[in-house]
Amino acid sequence: MALKTPICSFDAKTGVLCGRCEERLRSNDLTTDEVHASLTLTKLTQRHPEVDKFSLVTAFKVEDDFVLVLRGSDLLVIRSHVDIRANIEAIFNTRVWFVESESSERRFIENLLYPGRVLSVNLMWLPDGKKLTRVILETTKISNSKNDVPKIQRIAKKIKDIELLVEYKK
Ligand SMILES: [Zn+2]
Image (cartoon, rainbow, N blue to C red; front, side, top):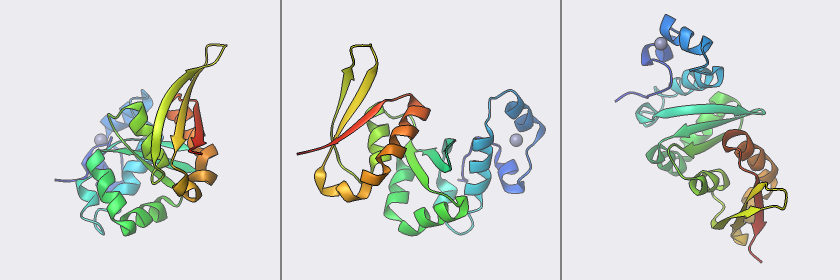
């Protein structure tokens, strides 16, 4: 089974988009972020046969970072193979975030905050009707994620329109 991406597998291998994918790009059925992520990830399939089994569902560039949306089983592989994760970031030449497709809002937040441990997720409504998603994180992992929180908030806002509020267990 070969790596699945938003573009044709032939295009991913040759690095050139076929007429159909070009047309999808023009009609916004495909994004340049998806094309870039597809071509970049494909380059790793030779070195890591595990990556050749992944399914890249979509990808987003947020500021300079990349967010890859993959299957849950792909995330498990990435989390258990430090070298694969490091090589993905090296080949994308930026920080890469991994989230699983078809998951709940809570799961999406947990993926972004990983390896921080999410204790609870609650919705809050402000007087002006704005919705906030309040997350309580386990304090022991504080050092892993605290500096990333502003960036994670911007990623959540851009991809899922979630206003994230991160707090720590006291
Ligand atoms: Zn194509």
